[in-house]
Amino acid sequence: MNFCYIDGLYRKPSEAYIPVTDLAIQRGVGVFETIRTYNRRPMALSMHLERLQESARRCGIAMPLDIEEMNKIIRNGLSRFEEDARARPYITGGDIEVAGQFPEGRFFVFFEPLNPPEDRLYKEGVTLLPINMERPLPHIKSINYLQGYLPLRDDPEAIEILYCPNGEITEASHSNAFMVKGKEIITAPTSRVLAGTMRNMVIEIAKEAGFVVRERCPLVEELPEAAEFFITGSVKEIMPVVKVGETLIGKGRPGPVSQMLRHLYLQNLKRWLE
Image 1 (tube, rainbow, N blue to C red):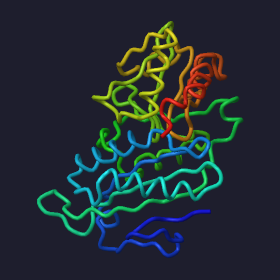
Image 2 (image 1 turned 45 degrees about the vertical axis):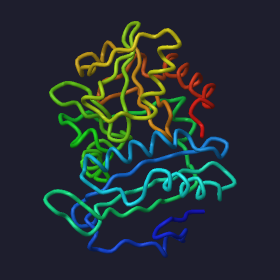
Image 3 (image 1 turned 135 degrees about the vertical axis):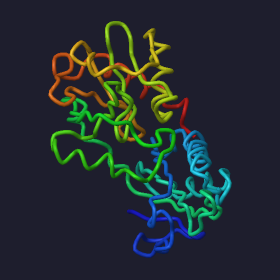
Image 4 (image 1 turned 60 degrees about the vertical axis):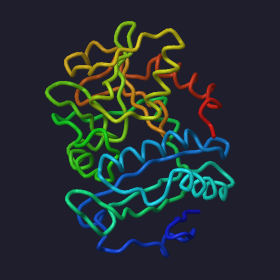
């Protein structure tokens, strides 16, 4: 079951539309979030909507609804599923631009079954493709993902690209990135990357478990020395990475730290469920 909320109604996707004059279509102006459920309860819904609001603010897009109303719309939509699902709220630039501002943003939400990653990926690990560039506008969760898709033509094995500007690892195209080296877990600071909701949760549970978390950009040259590497996201949770480009990570299979952190995360879900 897939459906949308737009213009005050929940509709079939085939009945939902935005005009071709919307600047999301014309210029790629828009922001979004992905909110999943566990046992039909939204995970960190308030945190996601606050970040959606902040992304819109940074883009100069006026909020078409307040957060409280968006919260109600998303909860209502998710409650229609009998299984776990996800909601993707979007705020587009609307039809008008005035001096780099977008005063009439447009809001809609796409609802669909969760469709989480296959279990084998957590057992086997995944591959990332490193590229020497930084994600444009890293503090905004933009709808423009083209720069994250094009390089994957060169490596069909990779599930995402890994941004590595000048040898510094910042983030993956859909995820925050973490390196395990020695007794430390290293991840780029939020001055360089999007402050992921899962990123924040992982740092919290890692510190509670006694790990030292360093917020600095890991280096590409450190990859051969890394014991583990993993990426995080709302739907993928904590995904082990066993290869970056041609470099095997650790022993080339998922390690104990990422597995432990995912176990601890799942044990502590109630902290963030709404």
